[in-house]
Image (cartoon, rainbow over all chains, first blue to last red; front, side, top):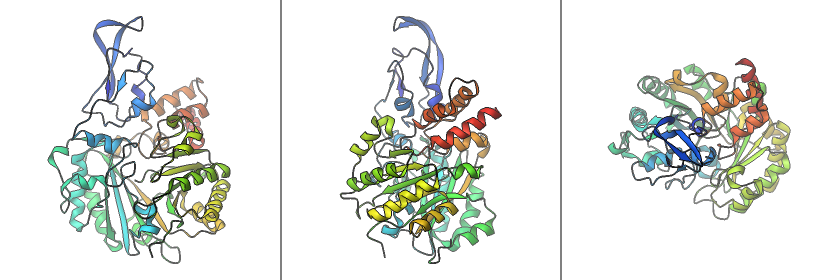
Length: 250
Length: 210
């Protein structure tokens, strides 16, 4: 995203809307007259820090119409794909950064009993992330011999999906978040937690971890013993697929 | 896309006022002709007492120009949502969805125990769950809990920390009501899953504490 300095009145309204604090106010080298008033300030977007999420353009409602979307070219297009919720991913054909995961599990059968879906959303919340941090996580969990979710756009960014190695030209791209997504056997959860505990000390951003599973026939949660044994915090709230999709996978 | 997960909450009483119902088709299985079914969900949600509706594909009511436009514009393959602030409304919409038998997948975000009880009262059996195991890594970079609770109601991270702090300040100085400030925070959340009812209560608390 960019700001047209010939239109910007320096009101500063846009600054607080940026989720990654990429917009700052600068003194102009020379005062200019815009909309009949002398302006000494101008808002500027740090393009290296900008994740191309589109929030400033849509939500700050610039009174001068100074914010505009510049033409994006690869690899910068990845920023918009992973940060702007209204961008449609080619792989999943849905908006957002992820996939259908457990949301349609009753019709896809993606996560069968004995399997756990894992999503490691790097950059969420708040910090955003460079893709080199996402790669660190992906390469670490590849030790579990996982298959990364093919419908997830992150998997398309890998040069070697077996190792979780990303394409070199993408590594320094900044995004609001990127989800490393795969399935494992339930009994692999302790190994996963150990890997992530180590990886979490090697990155400069945060990640949010979630696991998805089909419930047992009696309604119990098959992952509960593993979480309890690990001593990990688990939220009291989360997502429940209530099984209304049709046709059923089984 | 875990955007309705990871809604941080330290006050259980407020989490009891925060439910998001998501409805979507599945690619290449039942997405053809799904648009009218998703529109029907919106109608049922509004009848049941939804306080907000939204569409990941088209944007929220402010972006699209009103609630009616959301209903008009919904397409096949959309991912649509409704926000509810109490169990009674949630039970109403779940019962309506069961009866309507749209064939679309339905996911409820909220306290697991409460959602399970609401499913039972609606005659539904939970199929799968998705649990948040928290935040890892450089968590020292994150703001204090209250701000984080507000922020995480938009899972795509569209509601900035600085905007939240600005709204807390406006509430504290009497320039804006908590309800108006919460509505301002809703606007950047394109999917419309930000809960302004809960946010207003959090803003009131945060303004008093600051």
